Length: 154
Image (cartoon, rainbow, N blue to C red; front, side, top):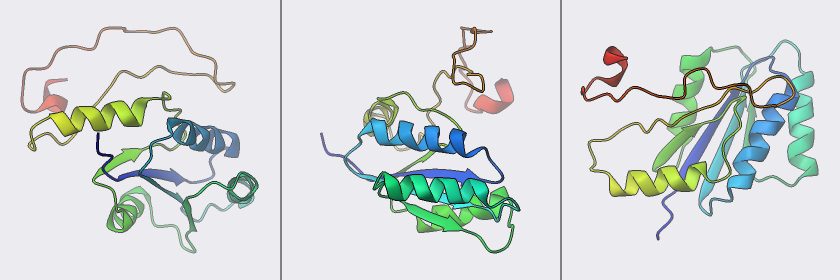
């Protein structure tokens, strides 16, 4: 299999650094061979999360691009900026989420098989608590959606 470039987008704003670091570690565990990770702090008033994340990146020699905005721009502008920088054929969002260890590879494999008119792949997610313990599944069955406008039908 060819490994098309993938960009992972991580936005943070006064986010608990433990959550961001855990998210970064989950991206790292994915071990996808053609990955770009862009992490952006949107000028958090509390600089401690950014400092902690930058320290973790340095201490773990994690290859990524870390950007700390000088002015708060909001989610939309940050996403547009990161998307403008992204080199990936595919984009993944991972902010304070934890990705399954094979998520990136499986999603890329799926996208590579789908026709070009597909834009989003959505999978099952499970909630975790503040200590990263899995919470009970509330609704294990996602509805089957046959409509072209998935979000409207849901």
